[in-house]
Image (tube, rainbow, N blue to C red; front, top):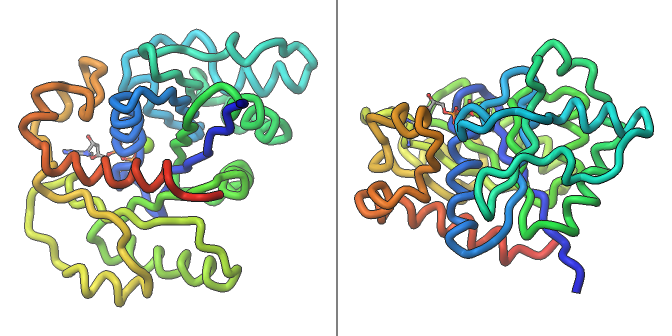
Length: 252
Ligand SMILES: Nc1ncnc2c1ncn2[C@@H]1O[C@H](COP(=O)(O)OP(=O)(O)O)[C@@H](O)[C@H]1O
Ligand SMILES: [Mg+2]
């Protein structure tokens, strides 16, 4: 049977909420389940996937889209960089000046080709609702919003949930990320639900705050694949397991 991977987008309504870390951690969990994942970095101006994984950007999404546009494209494999046996990457443009020149005309073509080769496609994004990000949301089977305990973030999330409610769409989930800092949060989960007028589907607890996270980034390591982290933060990692379980189960 042909594979038909799901397109899972990780996004937010504010910068720095933990999207890139979430994408990598989910890819790690998928790897532990022997699932092949393609990560596409659509944070075009300041993509963090390739640098977080220490992979050399031999090809990038600009080159891929440009070749499609100019009829020079042959195989998707020619543009893919592999991190390990299970995780492949299409990085953001090596030269960020080219980001604005990416046409979104062939985004769907890329997704259609990738869907046949992977078990899951994870899209990392930024929080700007520009044309390519909007199109990507349209093509996504599931959208994961990573929010933090921050009034501006929560108010903007409310705007977003009301847009979804207006469109009668519910192919998104909300992840409250409490792991980026280690201090007591101001709003309780009850407050947050009231502010965003929606449910919090998953929480990454503050117990997953990793003080020396930068060391892992420098070493190009994925937290959820690291044996020390897996042991020490077993409970917190279960929250990522739950997200992956839901992703794999969710009907299109
Ligand atoms: N579990 C964690 N523990 C400690 N710091 C974290 C954790 N997750 C994310 N961070 C830090 O939070 C910051 C934002 O994370 P990142 O994934 O880059 O967010 P985004 O992609 O939304 O901009 C980074 O500096 C990252 O190292
Ligand atoms: Mg990021």
